[in-house]
Length: 538
Image 1 (cartoon, rainbow, N blue to C red):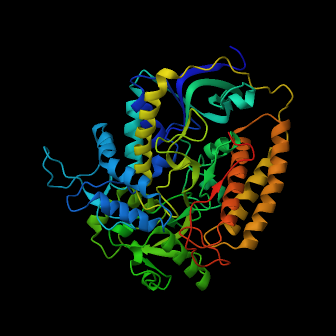
Image 2 (cartoon, rainbow, N blue to C red):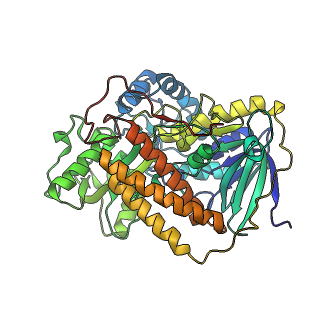
Image 3 (cartoon, rainbow, N blue to C red):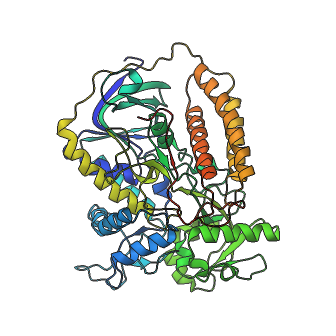
């Protein structure tokens, strides 16, 4: 076997979560699809999503109400046409998941011929419109999609493979209009760079919350797709809007354990250490206020009181009800010594969702011909300045469908690219200074948490940018001299995305949604998306 093997497919999908697998299944009847997964195929944000997926299934609800709630949560920055597009196609796309075997919970007395789904309510929603599978919806969706993917002969999944960089006509010196031709990928088992040629490439790599010290996301959420698209010349937008989930478990042995927003949707209270409630002091919607409001309130109370955490408490509800609706959380908390039916649970905010990303059109197509971005990696205009709960999985499945339809319509006129240059690693050697990566990694995540977190200032952002520039210089020098590794690739990407986040934040001279700065506490009247253009656009 060559040390630089080459793969060929019609569509290369980078990412194996809800967006990537849904698109692969839509395309598989007519296209050869290759899916890359950095780790095990289930190791992504989808698998750990607890709450559910928003869609209008209740006759007392309406698409217009879903649209209005989304726009209110987005604090004036949602693209209304996109919100309508997603809300209008929500039921059909969720029904596709149901038809594919996702076991959403049903009402106890639901007729088997006309099943009625149990709908819950979460922050920002005016109606019960969240379909869920107990409190492990993401696991149910991911498992169902994986099972269907494994049965399809036209889909291959490469686990433990990182996408390293996109290959374009411009990058390798081919004249004519620029277009994506494939990607270099890192085979973690062989520790070698391989090449993929494809008619189309789809980024479904998720967000970049691993840039922060505290996050609810799995380790794979390192902003890879955003960084690769930027290096290929694509615009990005709204990366200042990083959602901090208000309620992650505060415990020294717990990593990334989220306490679902559905808990508050079912009546849980947020309390200070003395047991008093505090959300009514900040918003009339109390615990059901949007996430940005709740996260800032918790952050404020922690700083005001000098407290390590706040508490979430649903012990006033019937214990049988709590255990039935939140079995996963109940069992997990028991392992840490907490009884959800009796105890107030210590919580802190943690980085949770990247609302901005690679700019795409209604079909999920980026600025680069042949390159698509779907799911959390993208900026569609749906979330505006703050994502409403359970709209994320919905965006994944709707845009997976839209992008698949567009790729299918254009597949006949696209050709497999000619053989591409192999990755040249003849001038590099194995590193004996891996500690440099670890030091830079920890420094980045710590100062991003301190300076680009829930509350910001111009001075903090300037400090962060200076440190990012130094770390980028060190890391790029390291990248040029040593063989690649998983940690090096992720650090390189996180530094790039961190820079874009800070530049977006510095450009927004107001406080809106998830971006709050003490130097500009008020909103501007004529606000719009923050768009960054690369020095060498595609």
